Image (cartoon, rainbow, N blue to C red; front, side):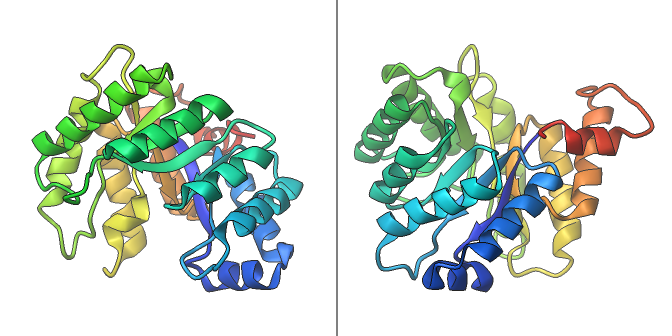
Length: 264
């Protein structure tokens, strides 16, 4: 299970303020915290309120890399901002994200090839997020076909089935699980899978409990990675335990600590 730290995001007030004031300290503190807790990647998002996303993303990448050597997941709907970030990344990064819309796939997969980046592909198109797994899989197949056509290894593509908050889209959960299962049958080798884990509990009570329960259930269906709160110790313990029970890791009494240290 590849954990992508979600916390360096302009949707959080401390990060938004840090970006606005060009104060690297909160960003670097979160980078170090997430790396210490076992993050494999750090998701960077300048947020919706920044006027110049291009320069903001470039600055955010640079100051994050001063504090952490982890690879970065550049998160924006502004592909000029993502490319500006890719230009200054010291390690191959991940692009978050592209829907199954042709002109956007053409732009993102070309960038991925140029910068040797991985890509998160969203199971959605101009019509939005489908409700059923069959429609999600059809969109995932479009992403797979375009990734392959651009000459990018399919294991560098992560399909995100897109989970809705359980308090407004409860019936989507089983469809997401089925999509995770079916994605593994799309190609050989198959693409990998990911989720924005915190979305499942948005606006609900008991958010941490919902997140970790959903994570374990999704892992059993083939989830490979998640953008998540890696500073949630109970989530880490649940994920590490699931890896043992799914026979992904060898059991030892300190398996939680081993899991956290694997990405360091």
